[in-house]
Image (cartoon, rainbow, N blue to C red; front, side, top):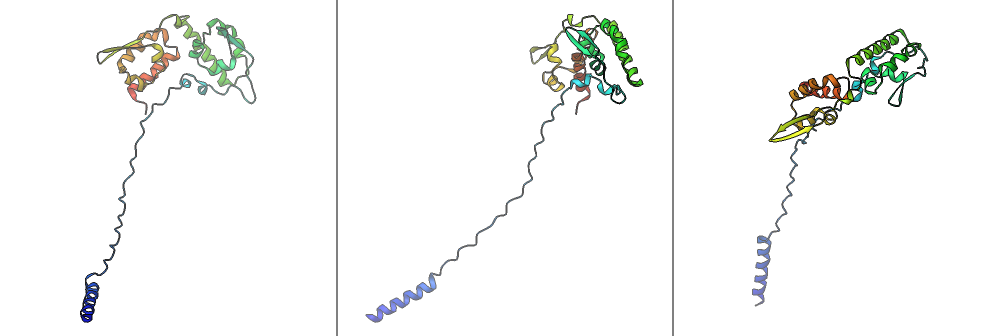
Length: 218
């Protein structure tokens, strides 16, 4: 009996040694990440603002004095406001007109304004500005603001929308196009109001918008 048990035990040991070898763990598979190009989203271009400085001309006026010269305490009055010699020198005649400055007030102050120790170039430029202002006054109504600015009416997709003078003079060409206002309509509008408003900043703003609609702004 013992021999039988011993033989069974030996057979079991041989079977275990031959048939049940430990399985090796598989090597982990390392997957390299796939390189992808970054997605670049181009921002929508934004139309640059129309600066009021486009309608002033300080950069066009030569330096007024040699050395440490200064503007004399001379001013003209309009609608309760005083406009000094320096303001008059560095603003254009459309700004003068928009401020309500009259021909008589400039005429009365001309001798004093030009009597300052300007350089020759500055004196010539200021004289030219005063002369142009005189011509502007002669060609335009005394009070252009008494004329009510019209509006533009645009029909699109079965609807009619009205855009006032204030709206037109405070929005850019991108907004005009979003409102479906055609460039031809803007040109017709400018022609219609030029007699009464061509000297105003609002008119000149709309002119810039029209130019951008036709020629682009980028």
